[in-house]
Length: 155
Image (cartoon, rainbow, N blue to C red; front, side, top):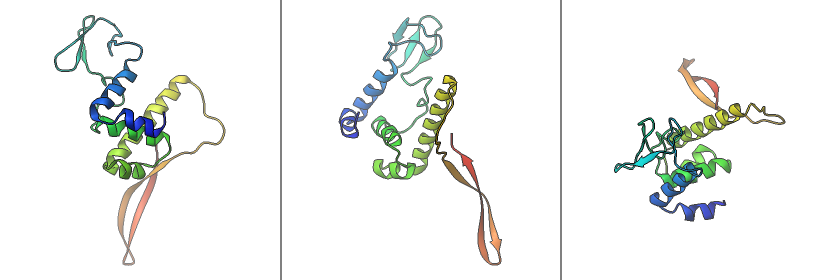
């Protein structure tokens, strides 16, 4: 789906949540703990599994379960990630905090890594690796401020 059609589809928080909910339950609603389809919807927008008595929401058991970004911006951020925009560019485009977007992008990279490692397939060809600089220490040398930086691989 192109970015214009996606932005119309998720034009507000309610439509975006419906979009995510339909993606999540495309195979039908089932318990995130035991996979039972014996489910009852509760008044607080959660579900109760009649088999194992677990309570769960539409995002329980997903990488987005602890997300605090509004759903409409979240979906657009995922699309911008797929299109190759940086966290800094995405934060500017969606008017979100840079560290929040960076954390979301790290979560998406982790999800991709877990998906690929479950597949047991290996990458081949030319592979690009992103690294994040981390300030280890800073100090003064000959009246000049010096920063010691190490790099951490993302993913």
